[in-house]
Length: 61
Image (cartoon, rainbow, N blue to C red):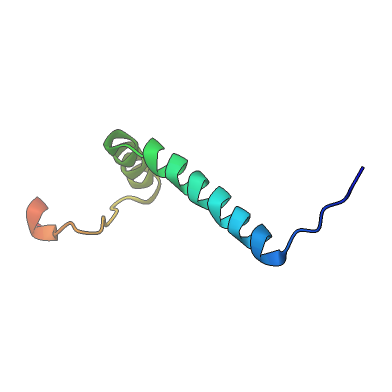
């Protein structure tokens, strides 16, 4: 069996490609329904939850 030398830069490129693919898969799995469920779980555990991009005036606060 022949051992092939791999450059550090090649390993870094492969690691970046793997991470990018993992991020793509994770991003594709996040749906509006999943976000709503997580918000509801947080409210059950902590009470009021502040969601970025949401104004209190939208809810009469």
